[in-house]
Amino acid sequence: MSDIVDEYLEGTRNFPKNKKITPASLCKFLGKDPSSLKRSRIEDYPDIKIIFDEIDRLQKLWIVNKKKENPIDKEKRLKVEYRDENDELKRLLSEAYAREVVLISCIHEHERASKSNENDNSLKLVKPRK
Image (cartoon, rainbow, N blue to C red; front, side):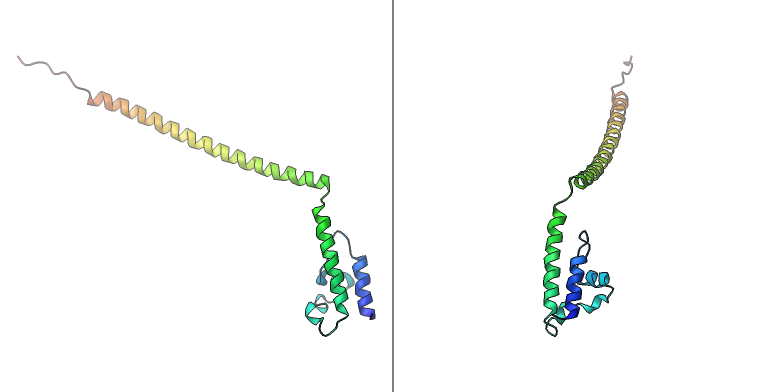
């Protein structure tokens, strides 16, 4: 293998484990131009296929490790999610209470109006004629 391929493979070994590896991130890590490592160049330089195979392998490992989340981190994430859900439910409940108050006031208004209409529409006794 050429020295360049060895340099990139060494870079994949030293790449931080908690970061996702991509061809561009590997180049930046090695202090090279991110556009220097492209899959379209495999036909011209067959040796770099080894580099891409290693990057793909490390990406799969990173995804698997990402899924194996630390229990403490998972607990913190769930607390935040539950807090957000709790806030949303409180907001919806207060909106529902507000609608109920408006409906109750409308009912009382209509009851008062109907009582006043009953009094106005009632038969008025007229003195009989003589």
